[in-house]
Image (cartoon, rainbow, N blue to C red; front, side, top):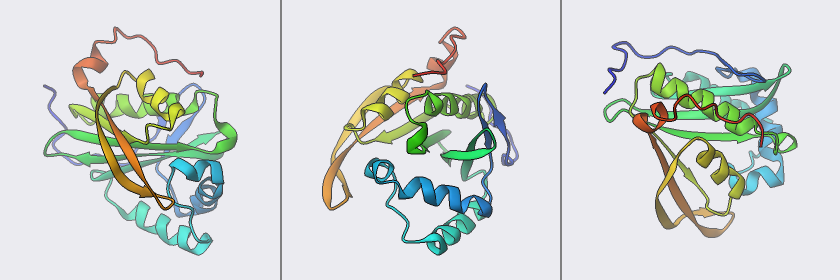
Length: 193
């Protein structure tokens, strides 16, 4: 078992072949608002923000949360914010819960997988955690594929777990252990869908 760093992790940037993952800034509120306002994105993503003021206040809260509790990465491609990834960090149990979203116009190019792979590597190699988990609506086939490409295994189904747009919805739980990540023999995560 790896030993996690003694001091809390500090905000950091990660680079992939096509992306820059960096701590978000309040000035990213407009890009986050545009992404979340797309009806196709909002079906499985967070509820649409009421307006820019609500999103700006949300961004102020996001950037104020200590990185060691909740790490968030704004995903940039060619200098534009096109997505976000979050890690809810449980330091006691050495587990991180991964969340992600890519703007609708950038779907189908493997960008979610590329970004999520970089963050998963960060969880194991830098933070020293033992497991990454993710919750997904099982009807969100594209998101399920992202998790499977990372090597995650479906560990359970929480039936009728949440209310989404006025109806009850299931949540599938996926998990990846440090040993599974290390055992992939250095096989690269595909960059494209």
